[in-house]
Amino acid sequence: MQKYVFVQNVPELSVTPYETTFDDGEWLSLVAGFDGIPACMDYLKGLIADGFSLINLCGDFGPEEVGELMKDAPEGTEIHFAAYLPEELAKLEALEQYIEYGQIIFGGVEEPVRYDLEAPEMNTHTVFIKDLDQAIDVAKKLAAEGMDGIELCSGFDLDMTKQIIAAVESVDARIPVGSNGIEV
Image (cartoon, rainbow, N blue to C red):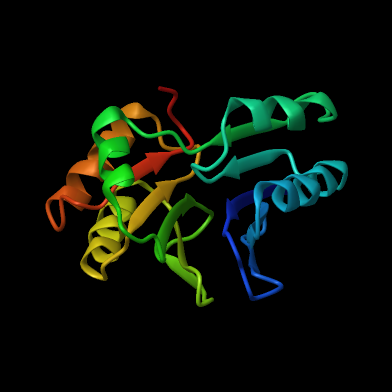
């Protein structure tokens, strides 16, 4: 079984554990948040040692953290962080708050499967989808719910990311979208 994780930095997180798992039979997927980059890094190093081979990180991470994690990672490990196209980065930087956080992740599902993690500091709304059509529908629903931002797993290439951005903008053009599947 393959192991996947999407980790986010949640400053001053008061809820532990702040995590959920989803097992679709092919992938064991974990979504987790921690207070501060150092705590995230310690957690991730343990997961890498435990065989997690696909790691997605929120937009608070960058190339330095990826490089540090790759030092001890076995061959075949993939580590990505959510990057933002310039227009999306401007939206992100304009935010006054970032409490409602949406994630869209490819998974072995027929219909979308949603998990919600709640804390006073951040509510994470993770939806596993099977394809781009579902992702577009889910992105519109998350935007309509008032997300402060949405991040995508590494399965979303540039074209797919742009389609999700357009879907979100059709509902609320203020919501930034980042993707683990692009480099900027």
